[in-house]
Image (cartoon, rainbow, N blue to C red; front, side, top):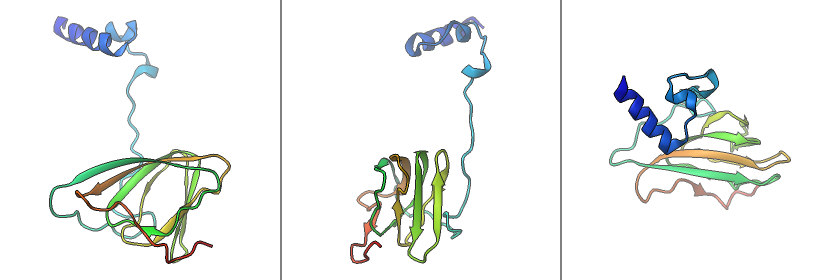
Amino acid sequence: MLAATLIVSSLCTLTSCSKAETKNESPEEEQVQSTELIRTSQSWDGVELPDYLQGRPELVAVKYVFPAGKKLGWHHHPVMNYGVLVQGELTIIGQDGKTKVVHEGEAVVEMVNTIHHGENRGTKPVILYMFYLAQKDMPLAVQHPEIPLE
């Protein structure tokens, strides 16, 4: 018990814990909470995700900020990716016309090898964190400037 208290005290010195944590008194609001946002084998349009790539993985995390009214051009992702929208509302439109509106706090699994684009139709910036399961030198997205936006 003494060793555990010393470890917690040492950690608290490094991380500015409150007195309650060092005395093993953990008020509910100070507990670590875990909420699974999504678990799926399909992209948002219901299509099964491809098998993992062969070879050494490269994991990439990207923060995107989309100003209000901003439209991304048509593109596709050659790698699996998913993310969490932390602010605003993002509309994703597939080339086939399927649409998905992602709301603040929601997770989304992007389409793989399917052309689509995103739009911020709201009045505040969209902030989106995306996580890509790629390989070295592989593009995260391939743009399609030959397809005009409406």
